[in-house]
Each structure stands twice: as C-alpha cells, then as structure tokens.
Length: 275
Ligand code: 7PJ
Image (cartoon, rainbow, N blue to C red; front, side, top):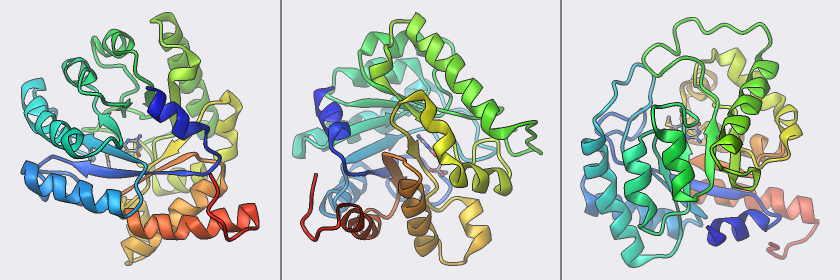
C-alpha cells in the first residue's frame, strides 16, 4: 500500500501501463495470454517508464461476456507472480471479481481497479478486506449493454452523484477516503460526445478531493477522431493530465512518458526531472 501512496504523493503525473491477459480485449486481445509474452510486455512497459502495471483477466470491451472467477484467476495469477519475481513495480489488478481481489491481495499487489466500482456481489466486502486502495470507475449499465444509446440528463452531475454514492458505500464497508481513486469511465456507457465532454470538463470531478485516473488509450472515440491511434491516445493523455488527472492508463507507455516529460518541464519551468 505504501508504495502506491508514496507514488501518489509525488507531484508528477503517473503512467499506468495496460496488460490485458484476455483473448478478446479491444485493442490487444490475445497478444499477452501466455505468461512469457505478458512478462516481456511488462518489461517493455517498465523500460518505457511505467509507474504502475494494470493486470486484467476479464475483458470489459463493449458487448463482452463475463468470465468465471476460475478462468480470470488462471489468467492473472501467473502473470502477477511473474512480475513480482522480477520487479517491485506497483501492480494494480483490473477486476470486479471478489475471488480475484482476495486471491491476489497477498501477492504484494498495490491496488484494485474495478470498472464496476465494487458493485458486483461480494466485491465491496472483498475489497475492504484486502486493505488495498481501490479505483472506482463510473459505468452506466454493464459491458453487454452499455453502448446501446446511453442517455444522461446531466452527464457530469450523474457521474459525480455516482461517485458520492460509491464513496459513501465504501466508507460504510470500511474503505476510507484515503484508499479511493476515481475514474469517470471514458467509454463506459457513453457516446463519443459524452466522452469528449468528460475530458473537457475533468475539473468538475476534482470536487471530491481524490486522485483521478483516466483511460482513453486506443478507445473507439479516439479512433473516430483520428486514424493514428497512437498519436491520438498520447494527445488524449496529455489533455487528461492538463485537466488535473493524476494517472493515465495507457497501452503505449514509452510514447506517453515522453510526451508527459514535456508537460512536466513546462509545469516546473525546468529541464530537470522533478518529482
Ligand atoms: C478502463 C479500465 C478505464 C480504468 C478498461 C479498455 C477497456 N480501468 N479498464 N479506466 N478501461 N480505471 O482498455 O479498452 O478507462 S478496459
């Protein structure tokens, strides 16, 4: 826990590298299913300057079906074990599954990243029991249906109300504020216009006083804007950081880190790499 907390205390933005250990993820599905391919990718991301590795064994792309806890465990456990054998980098576990939260908690992981914001049966209690920090992601609906004409009366307010409700539920279950990060959920039950609005108005999510995380890397809204997914994703990451986000979740770590060095240099008006 302290490893992540001390990272969050640094004044610079953080880069979370995505490791999808799934056969069907949106942009890198199937590439890292074998533990050795996955560990090579982790190595690349660490060399590229990743602060956190986000390991996920359940696809949450639009239309994705749930997988069993057993399958999810079989995918993520060997990879987490392998990462820990070679590195003490922060690991976040991208899961909504209580069994996976509990099963990975004693493997020296640093955070639970849950796109369902601990709403799956048993997830809240499991997350509480781990003592780990949690990232609560806003999602309207579920992955199977979320992109079917999502509608909001007031997008920003509904997301903030959701955050308040989930923070309250966490507090009740024994997860205190200092263990919570928030993510407005780019692509989770949102049209492209909704996604663009939430990036344009990120400041409105800062009222909770909690660190913000955003993932827009290679998502379809970016692809609708530009054919160049890499440049589009890096530009999006820069804009998210400029909007006050603490952590960007990305596929292309080295490229994002390079771009963020420029924004850090401007922010500190210095060529020295400051923390
Ligand atoms: C996100 C995530 C995100 C957080 C995924 C994909 C879909 N976790 N897991 N935020 N997206 N916190 O990467 O295309 O946006 S899976």
